[in-house]
Image (cartoon, rainbow, N blue to C red; front, top):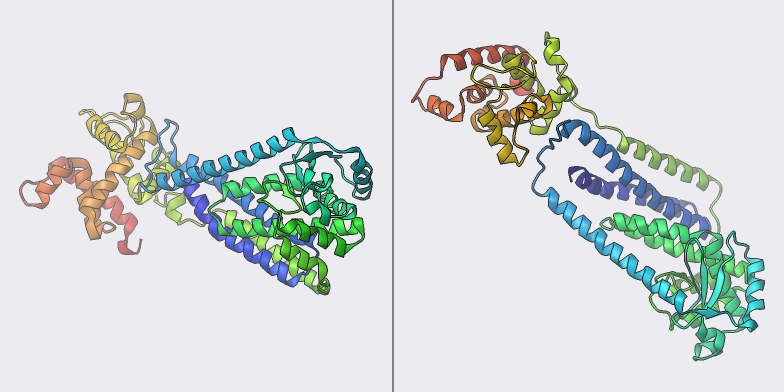
Length: 477
């Protein structure tokens, strides 16, 4: 859940960066609609790949730092389940919406009928002009108001019965040449492999539904996709104004689209684009600016995906003279300390004094493992954290033992260290509580009872090592 929440949050600033780069490219590079669509689609793909990479890298890091071989998982903040839950609900609702759209389209195909003989020759003529890698099947549907292409592996172009059979008033406004232009638009979708791109886009929009940049990039990709197919339809029919009139005839009859079709983007803007002159392309220097912007975006991707720098004490134990018996547990000590917010050096010192790095150490009173945990203390900690009850095997497991010991030590630092948690005085009080117990330490601080001699010797040992490590100014740590 921590990894998921981090990836979702990171996707917001990732999206802002990618959307900014795409916006700048579109402003400085007045390319045709196909390139505009490619830029927006590339932005979506970058965000999707970035999100998956964050999840993968985060999961790998979490596995190394938070999950022990025994299956122990670090406690997570209480708000993380809400983030994961809300995201899961959003993904499920989006998946239901996509499934509903697929069911509607599938129903259209099942209810369709073969193309009338009088239209076959006209459609075949358009197919010859717009070459596609896949030859679609053509059918007539009473459920659509304009031609649409459905399906990915086996595309089907559905032509509305209204404009082929001449039933409603719209049929009187569309000539055969105009209908052929609309068919050319659908064939252009297939030639461009738009059904595949649309499927990937839908998946990315499903996973990143919370990201405003994804909303904008998705809308821009859909708009530019329709513009690019309009351009190919005009090139196939050779009459821009006739094709614009065909779109105008569809404007009032269009229903919300769940598939790629002539009404898949705002028609009014597309008609205006067709009837007004195209903008003058920018000089070639704009392409250099665009390439520089792409390089900037890729540099941002690499910087964002690289591991963040860590403090020296987060990645290793900076303690001179630490014996190999403790040093070999370095990774587990650092992971447990960072997980519970304490200094890895302090945890290593406690481990040294308690067991000298012997994972199987057992004291005369029954304390076990690297941190010399009493079974009753370990059971109380595991119960409070909702972890598996400790067994002899688990208490001898370095990761499990260190995790419980680090958590217990962090509690003593929080209660007894106070504002002096990073000073010798604060550590001295917390160490007393770790060895003698919180109740005995409270009584000692209240002047009611002295600490046992064993605890005083323990304080002296840990204090000497910690003082040597923390000198000269512990508050600068």
